[in-house]
Amino acid sequence: MRRPTTSEAPVGPGLVVANRPPPLGGAAPPEPPSTGRSRSRALAGGIVSALAGKMVGLAAPLLITPLAFRSLGAERYGLWMAVTSLTGMALFADFGLGNGLLTRLARLRGTGERPAAAREISSAYALLGALSVLLMVVLVATLRWVPWPALLNAVDPTVARDARPVVLLCFGAFLVNIPLALIQRVQYAHQQVAQSNLWQAGGSLVSVALVYAAVTTGAGHVLVVAAAVLAVPVVNLANSVCYFAWQDRELRPRARHVRAAVARSLLRLGARFFLLSVLCSVVLNLDGFLISRVLGLPAAATYAVVLRMFALLTLFVTLVNLPFWPANGEALARGDLAWVRRVTLRMVGLSAGVVALPGLALVLVGNDVLRLWVRAADLPPVSPMLFAGLAAWSVLLAVAAPLFMVQNSVGLLRPQFVGWAGCLLLAVPLKIVLADRVGLPGVALASAATYGLTVLPAAVVGYRRVLAGGSKWAERGVATATVGGP
Image 1 (cartoon, rainbow, N blue to C red):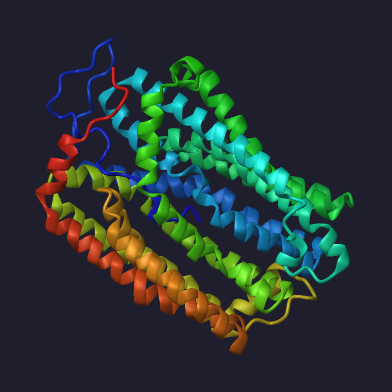
Image 2 (spheres, rainbow, N blue to C red; image 1 turned 180 degrees about the horizontal axis):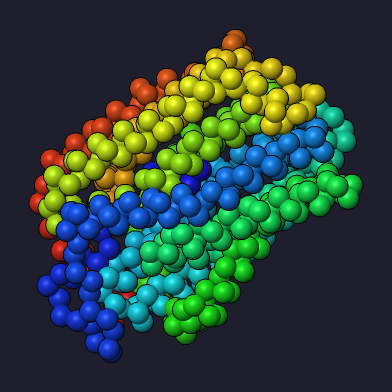
């Protein structure tokens, strides 16, 4: 799941220039600020287009999981999922530059400052391209030095031999995708949400096709993993080529558009969210690694399969709430607190309701769904308490997501930082203890309990603080300037 706490939006796009003259060079004038009604229509359109674009992509994990599980076996599949959980914890590796670029481009689209947008894009690609190469060199240089088989608790010698190739594939694909994924930020900033999500869904479908081909042709276990993890960066590369070569050549990354001042400004913007991104990623992705250490790789595989079902629900929360971020930025910059209050309550109800109903269904018939879906003999029956714990955790995520979008739209981070830090300190020891004493249900129950005690109160406190700020956020929006303008 793209996680909500990493959004970077001190102001809404196109709002800081309401009293500025049109930019020079024949650029389009700033877009007029929207009313509450038109803002709500834009929000609804963004939600619908995001859901429509993701519908095809939702089926891909459902198809890949049983294919890969039966081909790899429980322990080797658990090895793959354990490594994947570590790459998930490294989602902060772009240091917030992706969200920083989204923030800048959204504003520049409203002001029509196309040359400045080209400089932002080129500088971001240059920074993340250099970072990707540096991290890839570090990965290759340390691959033999790090005891990956022992770290991942690979007991079977044949599985242990695959540990380093799987680590290289998963981390390598992740690092290559760091700069390639910027195309999604560019498209979101230009309100091309459906187009971006359709490309991402295409990457998922390519993964399904490649995994199916690898399994049916009897390819090796490492090749099955390669088929699954390499499709996304390849499709992002194709998306980038199509966009910058034909759709919008003016914004194509070029060396002559790279500016040191723009790069430094992007780094400063991303650094404000770096520590928060680290905390969120660790808290949300640590379970697979902890379970593999305490209960073994087969247990990690079982937990990952069940969690994949609930990931569909949290993905819905992300899709629904992401368009809410720029809408909040605009409303708060204009002082339209009534719209923020009204729509936030609706978004909380919508998110929680849609997650709660299928979550309850999984508690009641989750094992039947698993048997029909995975159809693997070595997948044991799952306790209903595991489904209940993950369902409760998913509902809490859904309730907090709109509240965090309000805070992210003005860059209010302190309440979130306190909440996630408290969750990490409380969750890790509690999960280890409950995993040892209760098993997999203990990990899920610990996730729900610690989130409800730490992160959710922080979300409420931060949301109220934004509303109490009133016109302060509008004044901050007027005072904000962007580096690299015409």
